[in-house]
Amino acid sequence: MREALRALTVRGRAFVAAGASAVVCAVLLGEPALTRVGVLVLALPFVTAFVLGRSRYRLALVRVVNPQLVAAGQPARVNLTLTNEGRTPSGVLKLEDHVPYVLGTRPRFVLEGIGHGWKRHVTYQVRSDVRGRFEIGPMTVRVCDPFGLVELGRAFRTTVPLTVTPRTVPLPQIPLGGDWTGSGDNRPRAFAIGSAEDVTVREYRRGDDLRRVHWRSSARVGELMVRREEQPWQSRATLFLDNRLRAHRGQGIASSLEAAVSAAASIAVHLGRRGFTIRLVTASGEDPNNAWHFREAELNTGPLLEALAVVQAIPQAHIATDWLAEPTHGGLVVAVVGAVEQADVPVLRRMHHHAGTAVALALDVDAWVGRPATGSTAANLTRLGWRAAALGPRDRLDAVWQELGRSSAHVSRTSTADVNVEGVLR
Image (cartoon, rainbow, N blue to C red; front, side):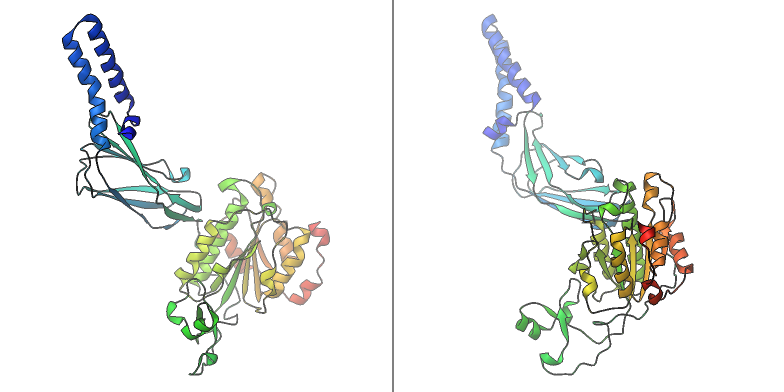
């Protein structure tokens, strides 16, 4: 009852004030008829609050977002199912779902006819031009009486995630090299039939088929282990994205970082469709959740797109090189970089030496702040032995990718060791 009295609307408070004023005036003027009218107007909000406050209602909400992984600019549909398993007053139900500003305005609905066994379905669309991971919810519910005198508020605290991945562009087929390169999991092996010691296993990684779990080894080690089954020797590709703040220019969706993330996402989808197993490496190092493992193309690129959806600029000064210390060499390395400084040259040399084929998209970041495009970063990478092409804010990604295919297919590592780029990058 106290909650209902505190939930009086402006109209309800106006009724209370008008009823009290009518009663006082009727007493002063000696008008019994006005007294009856004043008592009726004064009592109506209190009776409504009493009835609504003693009502027992149990609302349940099921929220489903389809799809939960959507590309930037594409809509997603939110389906709401509201049910009531208790007794509620016959009134109006006002719903407001909380969504982030970038997904659009907050949807509001008005539903009537609430009763026992009541059930309603509501659908609305959300759309974002900005990549990221967003939470939809919580839902705010307001129950009103038919007169609009009292309004009780409730909230469902549950939320549902929606991941908006970067925009992707279909890329043409070009000779990349690195085909059938790599080692480790994808090498053909002949396994003996016998004890756990005869089986080659590795740690479980997200996305691995649970049917490949080797339970005996898992019990011995204390964590899930999967078999390295005999499979064809597949191609491997490392996708490197330089997300350092100092390497990019501009802000928001018009920044060079957003162009780099979109390019990396397009390359990931393209390589996945060509049969590459891909891992994502950023300037902060390798994410264990995006390490190499065996899945179909869609399952392999899905986690990469999710990781790229939440990539942010980091204030780190240098590129992490822990992933370059692993014993596995060879394969394809595709780098999407911004501005390159002198301190980055040794790292880029190591990356090129680590790769069987090194390909780079170099963003001409100065063009994002209105300066003339120079293409110097791409030229410097070419001197280091990379197959590189410059990407500006007005360039088409598919055309620049095609230009990479027309560039030299191979540059000797020996010649790159003697290149001095100090004067160029100074």
